[in-house]
Length: 355
Ligand SMILES: *Cc1c(COP(=O)(O)O)cnc(C)c1O
Image 1: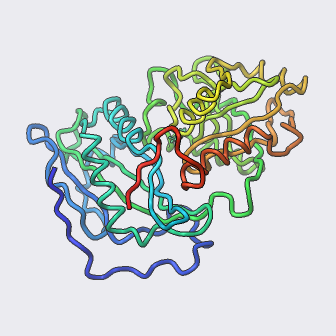
Image 2: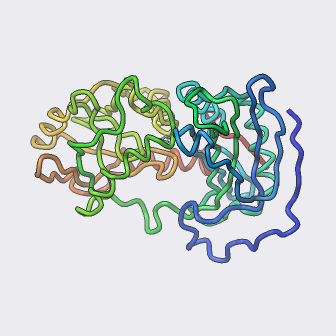
C-alpha cells in the first residue's frame, strides 16, 4: 500500500501545559485516510493535514450507525523514544468488529504501517509527562450516499491522534461503582463483542444516571438473565475472591479487551491461576457479605487498571478491600504501565518501537 503524504503548511502550536491536556480534546497536525469501494477495494491511502470531514447527508453512518473504532496509545519512554503496546491486536479486533457490522476487511499490517508513519510525522505531539500519552483513534465508517439499508459499498478508514493527560492526575484512586439492573449494554448475538459506536450510544443513559447518584461507572449485567457480571463502564472487570483471580468469560456480549488479555497472559506466564467463567451477581453479593471479595478492578487502555472501592447493588453499598487499592491491583497497574513505558523489560514481546 502506497501512502501519499501531504504535510500541513500551518502547524498548530503544541499544548503548553501537559497537566491540562485532559482526554481527546486536542488533535495533532495530521490524520490518515483511506477509502474503500466494493470492487476496487481499499485505495487512496494518504496522510493529510487534520481537517473536518465532508459527508453526504444521507451517508450510512449518520442513519444506521455503521461505525467501528479502536483505541490505543503511543508512549514516550525515558530515553525519548516512542512505542506502542500490542497494536496488531487492535487491528485484528477492528477487522472482527468490521465483520460483525457489515463493514469491509482491511490489511491489518498495512494499517499498522500507516499508523507508524502518522505517529512519526506527528512525533513531537507525544507528550513527555508521567502518565501522559498520545491517544490513537482508528475508526471506520460506512459511507453510501443513499438511505437504503444494505451492507455498504463505500467505506472510509481514518486514524486521528490526540495528546492526552494522565488518567490519574493524583495517583491511582478507587472508584464507586453501581450494579446496573435496568439497562443492558449488549446481548449475546448482538454487537457487544464489536467495538462500535452504537454500543456506546446505548450505554450513556445508565452511565449518566449512575453519575447523578455519585458513582463513577455502572457494572453491566448480561442482557438475557440480568444475572451475570459482564463489564464495568467501557472496561473489562476482574475480581480477587478468596485469593483467586476471576474474570467473566468472553461469552459473546463482552468486548474482548487487550488489557484484559495482557493481564491474563502475564499472570498465567508466571504460574498464577486465573479463572475465566461466568460470575453471577448473587455470587458477588455473597462474597461481599462474607468479606471474601478482596479486590475488584476494571481494566482497559484508558485507565489501564482502575480499582473499585465500593459496589452498590439492590440499594445496598458494599466497601471492597477496605476502600483501598489492593496489592494485586497495584501490582498489575505497575507491571502493565511499566512495560508500556519501557520502565520494565518487555519479556512478552508486546512493545513495538515507532521511533
Ligand atoms: C475498548 C473497550 C474495552 C477495553 O479494551 P482494551 O483493548 O483493553 O482497551 C472494554 N470494554 C469495552 C466496552 C470497550 O469498548
